[in-house]
Image (cartoon, rainbow, N blue to C red; front, top):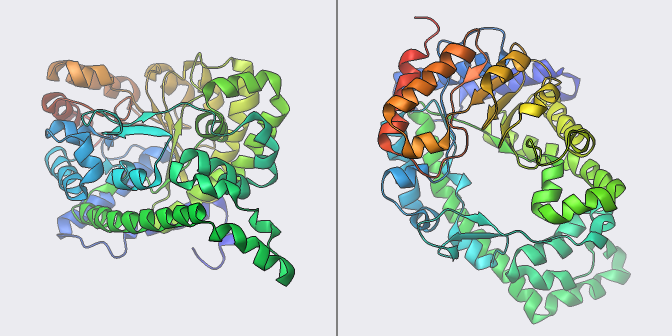
Amino acid sequence: MTENWAEMSADERRDARIAVWRAAEGVPFESPEAEAAYRAGVDRYCDAVAVTKEPDRVPLIANATFLAADLYGVSPHAFMYDTDVLTSTFDRFLTEYRPDYFFTPAIIGSGKVLEILDFQQYAWPGHGVSEESGYQYVEREYMLAEEYQALIDDPSDFWLRMYLPRMCGALEPLSRIAPLTDLWEVVSVTGQMIPFGVPDVQEALRALMEAGRTALEWIQKVGAFDMTAKGKGFVGAAGGLTKAPFDILADTLRGTRATMLDMHRRPEQVLEAVERLTPLAIKQAVNMANQQGNPVIFIPLHKGADGFMSDEQFRTFYWPSLKNVIVGLVNEGCLPQLFCEGGYNSRLEYLAEIPKGTTLCMFDRTDMREAKRILGGRVCIAGNVPAGMIVTGTADDVKAYCKELIDDVAPGGGYMMSFGTAMDEGKPETVHAMFDFTREYGVYRS
C-alpha cells in the first residue's frame, strides 16, 4: 500500500483500499457500460456496509460453491478436475443470473492437486464421495493434545513437521526432518541436510513440486476468468479469507470432539492457542487483500452458532479472539464479511460490538428482524433465503420470502440479499426468482 501506511488511521486505510478496489487497475473492461456497472457494484457494497445511507438498490450476493454445476448439469467432479469446464460454467452462471457479487471459482480447488498430495482432511468428488457430490470434511485429530505447546511455541514448525504430514499422506516424511530453526552457522548445516537426502523425504519434496506446477496451471486459468468476469462488470465478493481463531483450532487442528473436551480439560492451553493464532489469522487475510486489491475478507464461522457451546463458553473461548481478528482487519482498512452459519440469535448482542460501518454479517438461520433491531445502523446484515426453499420450493415461494425480507429489514440500508448458506444445488426458476425479484423490487431510489 502507500508509503505512509503506518501513519494512516483505520478510516484512511479503508478509503485507500476501496479506491484501489474501485479503480480495478488492469481489468480489461469490455465496454464503458461494464466499467460503470463494476464501479456501481463496489459503491453499492460500500454504501450498504457503511450503514449510514441507502445504496441505489439492495445488493445481491451469489454465495455458492457447486450451485452453477448443478444448474447446468455439470458434475462436481468435472468442476474439480477440468478447469475449462469450471470457468466456462461459472461464466454461463454470471451471464444468465447476473448477481452483483460472485465468489471466485478458486473456492472449488483442484482435485488433481489434492490427489498429488494424498489429501486426508476432506473427501472430494470421486475420492471418498461420489462424483456427483460436493466435498465432505473428514473429522480427525490432526493435532494431538500433547502438541498444544508446540503450536504455541512455533506455529510454522508445528505446521511443517506435525500438521502437514497428517493432513497430506504424501508429506508424511516431513515429520522426520529437524526443526529448521536448528540450522545456524557452519557447524550445523551439513547435519541438517541429511534428512533431505533420504528417499522418502525427497519423494515428499517432489510431490510438493508437482502440486505446485499443477496449481500454477490451475490458477492461470482461474485468474484469467476472474479478470474477464470483472471486465464484464461483476465484482468479486471477497478478496481474502480467514477464520475465527477458535475455528482454526477446532475445525482444522484438534477436531470438534477433542476441542469440546479440551475446553474442560485444558482451558488455559485452548485460550493460549487461539491467542497465538489470532495475529496469524489477521496477517493471512491482509496479505490476500493486498494481492487481490479487494478489501473484503470472508470469514466463515462454524463453532460459534447457537447451541454449539454455552453463552459462557462463547464469551470465553470464541468471541474475544474473533473480535480481535475483526478489529485487527478493520484497523488495516479491510471490510470483514462474517458468514454466520447456523443460528446466531443468541449471539447478536456480541456482534453489536463490531466497529460501526465496517462489517457485513451474512446470516443462515437467524431471525432477520431481530438482527435488524439489534444491529441496524451499526452492522450490515445479509441473508437468509433458505437453501431448502431454493432446492424444493417454487418461484412464488422465493419471491414472497424475498419481499418480506426487503420490506422488513432493507429500509434505511444496511442489508444485502443472499442465500442462507453456500449453495451446492438449486433450481433455475427459484434462483432466477431470487435474483430477478431483488433487482426489480429492492430499489431504494430511481
